[in-house]
Amino acid sequence: MVKISFEQKPYRKALMQAYGASCVASPSMETESGRKVLAENPNTPGSLGIAISEAVEVAAKNADTNYALGSVLNHVCLHQTVVGLEALAQMEMADDYPDVLIGCAGGGSNFSGLVLPFLGEELRGGRKVRAVAVEPTACPSLTRGKLSYDFGDAVKLTPLLKMYTLGSSFVPPGFHAGGLRYHGMAPIVSHLQSLGLTEARAYHQTECFEAGVRFARTEGILPAPESTHAIRGAIDEAIRCKAEGRSRTIVFNLSGHGHFDMSAYTDYFDGKLEDRDYDHAELARSLAALPVVGN
Figure 1 (cartoon, one colour):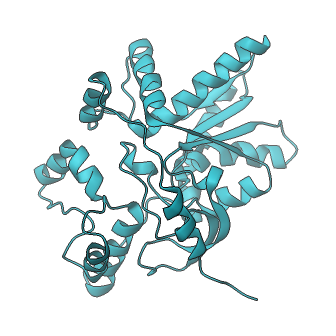
Figure 2 (cartoon, helix red, strand yellow):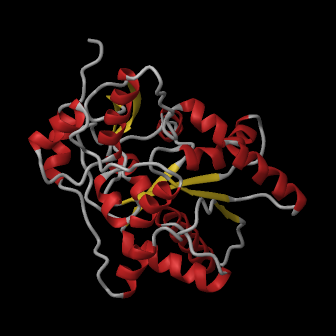
């Protein structure tokens, strides 16, 4: 479990322990990858890229262990499209169709799962939609990253992927939307972004939590920190419609509940939640170290 999430989200660790699992903070001393990262920076908050390196190493060294990726790769995005296919059916039942689709974006599977079926309809001659990926300002792969070949993990154990990336060595600050702390974006989402078929925007975490609390008090559902990014985007789109005097159908993906993230909400209510920006010098170093492919 990524170190910063290990520290910020104790209930997730407790749930895993309840089912008999042990939970180790990454980077750890249990793998060569983890030891290498800790030797370079003992105080690192960790990242999804580092955790992936450790997980891949463990799987490669143990015959009884396999590794399954939950985001980023295109086949995962394909599996996630059951969400968008269900949304298409739901819109048909409602006799409506979205003008705007919104999803939070970290590795890309949540966002692509919602929007790909609708974009498929559009590319086959159907109705045009705006597909908006919402990411954290502190880890802005689509809005500040570079479209390039890069490794999917920090220690460079994975194959190269062509994606919008902040560099595989980039370690974002420890904001609470842990599922969005990934340095790259799924290749298929990156390609759609490069073609202009999707758009992206980035938000700080406090304005997202404000949107999450408003949603909870309106709808009775407490959203996960990751999901609050999509809610923030949806609220801003609604405000834009009001300002323009336009009526638009907005569909966003509520991707998870926040019951394991109560410490984050406690920090928000106590005024302790801080907006964190990435280190611009670190990003420049990370992008400068991207692998050189071809001539």
